[in-house]
Length: 249
Image (cartoon, rainbow, N blue to C red; front, side):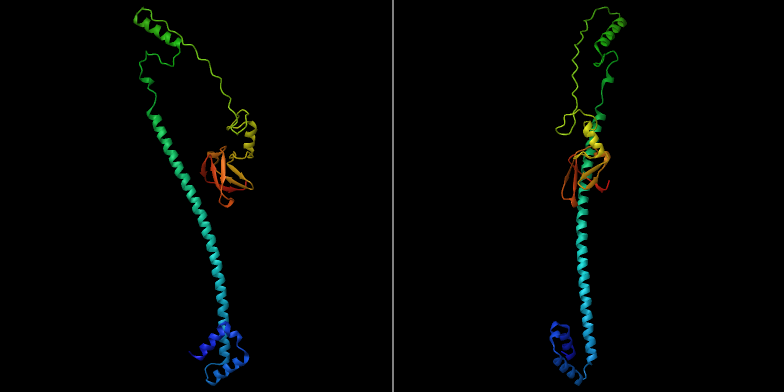
């Protein structure tokens, strides 16, 4: 190992800091006698090594900062993936509901009424007894058959059932229904956006100082439920997980 490399290793390591001046002078004298390198070059080497150590510390700090930013990016990516999974679940549920509606529509189209296939002289069941008796008399006059037919017995009319008065859908409220399933007082609260537990008429859900906006056409007036921490809140409307956006309204 050359002497200059040995000296450089002593200077670059912490052990070099404990070398006393007499020892340094002996080293410098040996270097001069063997004409290896000047003390000026040795000092320059020491300063270069010190500068390299400073740059290395700076690079280590940059690497630490980059690791912190990478951690934040991974956290944001995880939240984005969670939101994407929730959106996929909502889309899947909507497709299922659309499939059920299409099947129901096909059933209604293929099961229409068959009353038009009856002969024109057969009285419809929806006709009243007076109209049915009149039709029967017209048929007798047209055919010339004077044979008296059995008298038509009028069926007694069923007593009309009293309509049940609708009540407010808020649990425990017995006031009569006005609109959107609410009584007058709760309806006014809902319009002002102060009815807790129900999506307002603007599609706003209030959670303390936070406000979330959902689809007003689909969910206005529906009951909602919040789940999870504030930084990863999940909103359920009428039992379904829905998408939302944070608003300041």
